[in-house]
Image 1: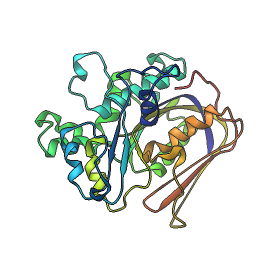
Image 2: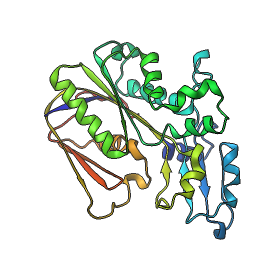
Image 3: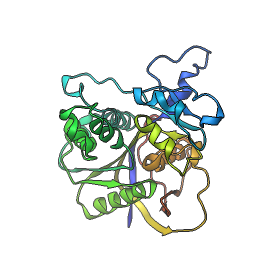
Length: 305
């Protein structure tokens, strides 16, 4: 299978947002637009720590949980226009990730508009917040549409005029690796001229539900929104997948990003300016997948996202 080339990559990460809130390089505050950190401890481990976000998270200190859970959050982006007043946080983060991708690729939004741009969206958890809000009647009837995963890529398609092939994959990191492989197939077959691989994961609205999970996450949950712009390239790409094996090691970067993990890893690989092949991997519910690019895959680079 022919390997695609990267035209742009935008990654918004709760890890970087939290770092910004601790102060700028000259010791000053980074401002109010940066992310926050939600921390939850076990009932016998002291206070519940710093709790931010929706009202339902404020009662977490009364929950009995296995261990401390930290969530590195992303702020709700401000986007002008009446159409976005009722948009959910995950939708706004998806749009912001595409903006960051365009900035990285030094391109205008017109460059991705039209029928020759495909859009593949991947998530494991982003639609949980809207479902919870609707079930608990906090979102209202008009927010019922946001309970479907399809609303996030739909907002992107409407805002940026993307009208080509379209797909949604539900799952963790292996699903994102499959999306990249599917993008390579689409490009090789001539089904499109470019593919956007979009991944969004948010956790704060359902922080207490993750805390109750018996698996008790060993690493922070890092909210991440990322978009990868792929075009035809040289070389080859291959995807391997297997189930079982030894337990996964700690995720790259010290945090769990679910489906957005491979795109964040790819951003880190680019930042190291490493030429030659790249290998991305990830686990999800007993599956381990690995994606290998056999040659240099970047044919245009802008500033870091």
